[in-house]
Length: 101
Image (cartoon, rainbow, N blue to C red; front, side, top):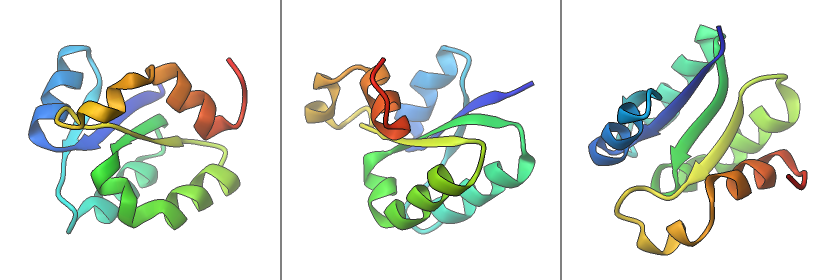
């Protein structure tokens, strides 16, 4: 069964876990390794990663989205990123996929 994952700080991951999303707590130093671990599992459909962690991984995220059939990796605001919550999660997904929903 395909999973949705979140990679981020403890507060963001905890909030998503309440909604049933599998969460991985990470900092900048190990975010790339955590992303690769999830991809190796092979069960991820969507991986959401907080903006602060995704900033250092933009090239890898683009490569994953362009060359792998799954997962779709999207950067989302963390729980402390108040400016980022002006958009819906669907707008982040459609931006990552390059389509209009």
